Image (cartoon, rainbow, N blue to C red; front, side, top):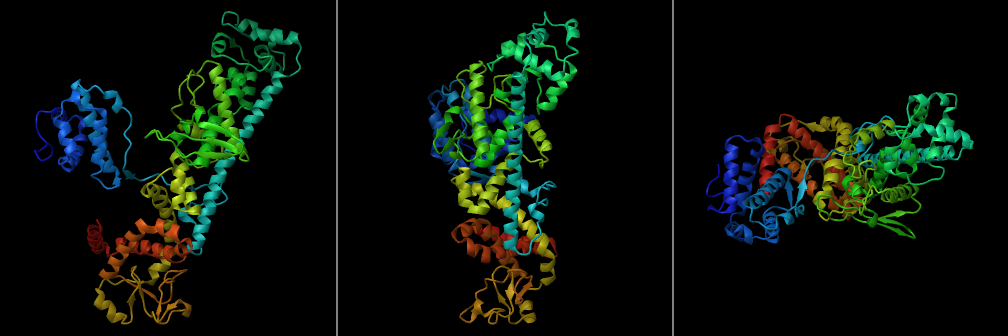
Length: 598
């Protein structure tokens, strides 16, 4: 299972823990099946570390949490700054085994200090769920996904993709605005019922329908049948609350109203998303329901691009009312770091309403005794605990507003992709609170670029395929066919570099090769697939994969004119190489390139 080369063997606490894992794995215990290969991957890389050797030989009662956390940091330093999800899983397993092994000894006194989540110094490259704009949305002014947008040029595609993202974000904002307006109308309707002019005698008589379970029964219903529906509901509201006041949960549990079917129908007809009936009518203005709460979450997420977990961690103490706006700051659940602060403008009516509603709701929960010494804003009124599941709430919100079935992760991806397209990846990284550009590439490279590449591929692959002369011969055969061909360096060649279609393209006596792939390609561009061009394609794709963000931020105009068409061309040509008769040979070339670049 393990060898002496895997670890420093002995009789220490870690050795005993690994031995127990190996034994359980050999008995096919599924819970430990993944840990053994993870440890076998990590241990050889760290066996030389002084910190690791010392810690293994130290008695558990003498080990401090600080030393363990320092070990985790040193171990991570043995890896590149950006790692795959597989390596990240290996490191997570290693840290878990170390923690569990120390706890199992019963001698480690600082166990609770290790409960705090470890703050990784590495960035994890992982596949996301894409963006909302790459989903079909028949109710959008631009219904087709970004990956299927019609366009006349790469520049036109970028423009249309930005318009598509703007339309998507506007749809989300409009859905929130609709929810807020509906909520205001519902509160106005309830207030009109509370102030309806009804005689005290009628209120007193109908108030018999609200009382303790001993006082209320079906025998008392007969006298109320002849009253209009709104009169009955208004009398019930006024009998409980002649003036707006606090309704405690104890009061709700002690007094059970008898509601007629017509009153119930009226409540469910007038108040969207209501679940509890009469008492929710009474408290609706103060606590709302999950529909209005999700609209607040989405409104904040659209402005800040925070993860939904960070929005849910928003606290009253992290909201500062300023003359020019409202300063808010959430927390990152994984690391307990703060999110970048965000200033909500006073002119942003929806965002101001959302935050003020959450503050008013928190104050009501505090006065009603639902919460004590808790400044978190998303507390469930009925349980006094944090809301933990939003899946059904989000689906209902999407269905009511005819939105695509997106995830909360895709909302964040959408905002950051839009920010990257408008202001560049550095601005998106700043908005996301990421210091490492490798992390923000998840939103830009893995989402935006793939969507644009798909759209370009659909539009241009046919015209490109017609321009490719499918020949698998080596370079000397190519030169017999086109003696004047000169390599451009990205997989294409030029048949006449001294005489371009536009003489302004010359730099001295040779074309600058900056317009080879513009529009539908220069007439002098020739594509002959050979070993040389395969290598050029692989190198070009690898170069732009790591450099496109820097190139775009350094010189957006040149990136759009020169680099973007070349980047798109190389990606499409790579697809041709990997799907045609050249697939096996291209795979060999790419493997060689990857080894050279690693």
